Image (cartoon, rainbow, N blue to C red; front, top):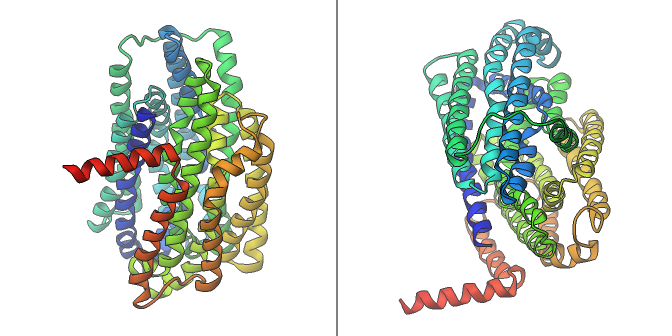
Length: 499
């Protein structure tokens, strides 16, 4: 358990500082690019993200098979997995880079509704971004390999360095007067440096690693696992980037900027909390390899309990302080327009978080077929709902579609997997993991109804959030924290008093 906490902390911190730097960088990028330029930058990111649909999600294969074979002391099998994974990731990267270079004009014409000069600049920038796509594929697999060895301290160090460098270099280049093509090319160079560093780290952590061709049985086994994990990746990419592409095609880059700013804030914040539980996937694989199902059930329910509490607490604070936060981040008109979008996306993120731990455990046990098929269904329903929402309510309709889809699919998914592909019943999950945070979820809904999208204002904006945070922390300690962990915390606090 101590190693799990250490990995979760490292994984969290590895994304926290890049998220803070990103928050700092957004107003500066808006200042240099304007609404339309920032919208084009967001669309370029969405386009490259969509090309990652070609990624076979070999990193999930690394998390499952490297952790499994490393736990059972089979170094040759580990070498086979790593060799096969690096070759597959590099192949996908080269293919994607070539396709981006060739089809960039047609892609930009289809999704960027802007003047001809802006589209021409976007074509050049997109071609420059192809270099980053190539190296990001290799880096993704290598990072998964490091994490499979339970060395999240190492993987997080690389992610922190790369995550800070990208926004800092972007702002510096824009401030120096460079265009988007130079910015995207610089990002590609940073991706190459990151991939090289991860390769050296893997070699150091696996001193017995050799280039070894995986036998056919191994390739088939990994292929079956990865094929369904690939569906999850396709769905995640389609849903994460599809709403922006639909907005760009239907309403233009300015609408994309209005939507992408609160979405980026929500995704960054809840991406951090996801990382607290993400370390459970290789742990599930390791416990499965050693036949410790009871330990996995206990850890899974406890992780789900804590992550939902953290997500609900963050949602509460952002509902109250979201308006003032946006006002400090953006100008008044942008903040007022983005407020309702932020609240809707917050509610959707908290809802989605209820599927995180079951999905991670399910994948760690090698049952990616279930999560893959559900993820594809979620994305398909969500994108259809996005089109309907945009036609009915514009930009806010896209956010409302995310919330509606999340509520439906969360209930269906947890009902299906309980007792089938995860080692706990639905009743145990609701009682042990969900029930302790229900008061926070109810309070969040009440605050949304009362405060709306603006949150607290005036002096209340400075007084209410700290008081609410204090109440949430007290409630978490008294109700949510497991009795055994609460006793440990009390003993440690008493020990500090005597020092």
